[in-house]
Image (cartoon, rainbow, N blue to C red; front, side, top):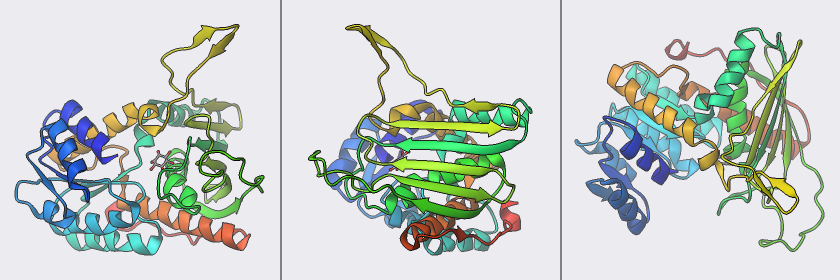
Length: 329
Ligand code: ISE
């Protein structure tokens, strides 16, 4: 993701210059830096953030490092776009809220880029324009071809599902009041490379404070393609995402529509619009319309933490309502 953001910033965001690429693997940092014309590479993220020639920071490192690096950027007074999730748990994300409160201003944007996806934006417009009546349910499917290296079972909930937790809050303008989690009992390893699913499919049911229900299927080992679907059901109708596709192949007495291999082509426009909005907001000094905040990131983290507990304990887990601090109101 860091390499993709670097390319978008370098090639598609006027006014942005990628100055330093930071990665634990020096060869990978150098390859990205050369590809985007960055001046330098760094192995130490905190050192890169502190540089006088760095005005803003994009964090796209492993999940547990997101919050500490974001805190370092806030403490350096630098705007930061933190890839989701803010943190694997609410407790790990809390220092970011504390750092922004101490700074007395919003410097953190969260990389829930689906808020910038044309499909989800049209879905929200259909709801606000009253075209389906009041919302009743949101159904989400989130399928990856295969879990990335290092992925663990709970990460289906703490890493992948936060996209749905955030898009549900944003679409329905409400918070999650409770979460229940279920997993099917899969047949034993089917001999597929890697011996079958890493995380296994998870089905989550969210109850929201405003009333609508949200169902989420997350399957990080779906095998057939990257497939994200959403349908918002209202009292008078429904609106569903039409996944973008460039072609339909007609051959051999059949028609085939290709699936992307992962999220980057599926949400390329969302990332582009998000990154442009983020840089424009740095220039204007005010948060970009619709971009997620650290509070949104923290809310998604607390839902994820509750979801992991709900799955482990086999019970519905309620979340206390927490009104946003004034900084995020
Ligand atoms: C990844 O980090 C993403 O953000 C993708 O959008 C998501 O589909 C995938 O499951 C995550 O691992």
